[in-house]
Image (cartoon, rainbow, N blue to C red; front, side, top):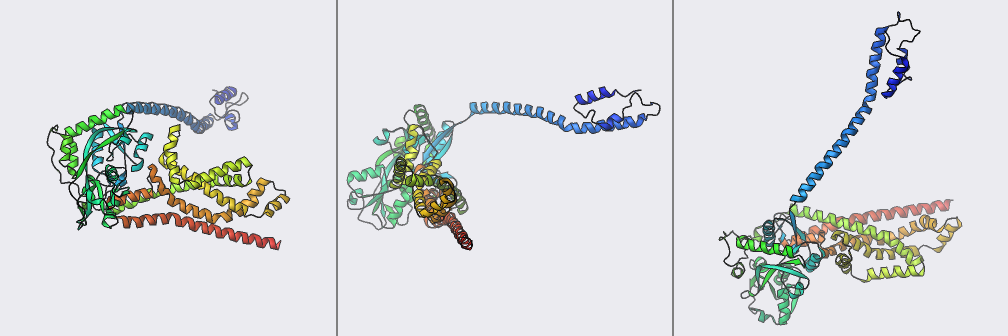
Length: 568
């Protein structure tokens, strides 16, 4: 009996990818033609070959398993791709549309503001109304915080779909946007300090200073009547100044007066409300389909009584609203107890966490802007001092433009101007780039002064050592200039942390914006101000400390190098 032929054994083993003729042990176990078969130990040979085969199979198992896994992995990728495509198609078909609405939460109650119990959440009668409108439109509401002064521009830019923020349909605004049906009829209320008997109507304010919000019906009425006016960004500041006797009266819409004056122990209403106007939802011109949806949703929440329920909850229901709502409701809504802002307990834990997240945004903007400033500052400094005439001219124009114009104007230009030519950036990126470009102009002058402080002999010595200008600059001039520029660079970096607060104008939510929102919602201006100040110190002091340590280290290194040069 013969197990196999050596040649066929080798061929079979080679085709299977296993060891062939190189496996001397296996070949020795195979009897050749000259072997005496009577003395050949067949049992030992068979057992050894079986063991060898099992060992070979084990050695080849990873390769086979890899092939199997590769095939299975390809199948898995295929099935996952098909599943994801199916889910994507289904979700695209069944995806609920989003209604993005913009408002200024720092304007305070009762429109939209931070919940004192849960500072991470927004509440307000307009917030609840938008939720009801979105439900009637089968859309998902998405709130986009913005600044009051730039709401219309942000709407035109496409930052959100509608404005819901106590917006009045003025002639100037009608030239830029369109309006929905009215959802609230407002009146104006005059507020004075308790004990003030000289002011009982607007006519008594001819020689008095009256505070109000800018670009509102109240401000236009005061201008028309020739009454001295002081504009404010939010109602809280106006009523606070009235309590502190900085102004004589406040003229504000009834919703704001209800929440900030009627419950005050030191303020009172002077006379009855007067002058009527409407709040409407603002939409982009051309969004006629969305306008039709919004109008239909307003009609529905009025007809079903949902809007009246919301207004009664927020103590804003009055006789003026009956003209708007009319007798078209399907049923009389039940009256709730009414929302009392003074009954809310401020949640400091959530407030601190919200401020922490806002501080992270501030740090991101500051570090990103400083990186841009450092990268651009050195080429600007070299180009202005060492470049050809045309390059010096360009660098000088850049530097003088960014140093000579306010950073707020630059941010507004980048945020609202660039989208007209197709260069739209999100607010945080606009702030990062804008502040970086602005600070690059200042950093360039720091670097230029540092470079010019290096004696000319340093260049000449480097040239004598055989260095080219680039190597001389990198190895000799730049390290010395860096030591000189480090203190003013640190000062600019600390200033940059504070200058990030101007980003609120382009709807960037950062630390100063979070402070305004929380303070206006809770009235905790002092304690929140202390907390925010500590956050700014926590961001700037470590950087100043690290810069001083680096400066001392560089000074020690310079001293050591000087001693070594004397020894040599």
